[in-house]
Length: 127
Image 1 (cartoon, rainbow, N blue to C red):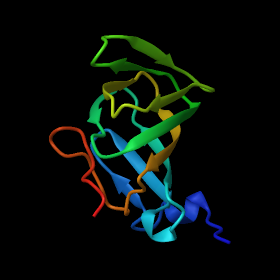
Image 2 (cartoon, rainbow, N blue to C red; image 1 turned 120 degrees about the vertical axis):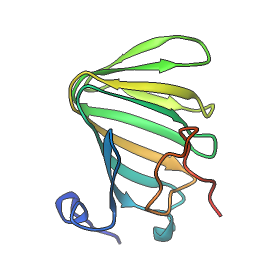
Image 3 (tube, rainbow, N blue to C red; image 1 turned 30 degrees about the vertical axis):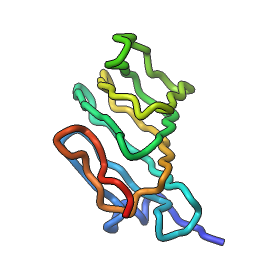
Image 4 (cartoon, helix red, strand yellow; image 1 turned 120 degrees about the horizontal axis):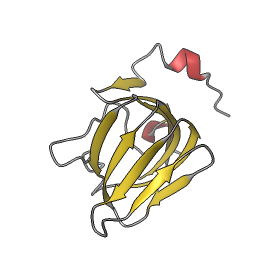
């Protein structure tokens, strides 16, 4: 059994930050569960371009308001508490946070812990 506290993980190397977000990785590849689980904060009034070419991701909005744009279709969707979006086709997208967003994220394959987006908006492929 694995038991962790978000507040404790935020004080360790499991908390990774960029210019537009902070991601606390509660479950990682090394935990051998086949997926990783993160609580991510997207800072208010930011725009983040992402393209997870090497991962599938599900994102559930806990709090805040924003929008996501699917760059393949041009469709834009509101992100509010209770919304889930699933990047089931390695979707290239933009996420705007109109307010600070608190998101629960699941990645497959799992990340190892210190990944940040590369110039294309992706995390590196699992080794």
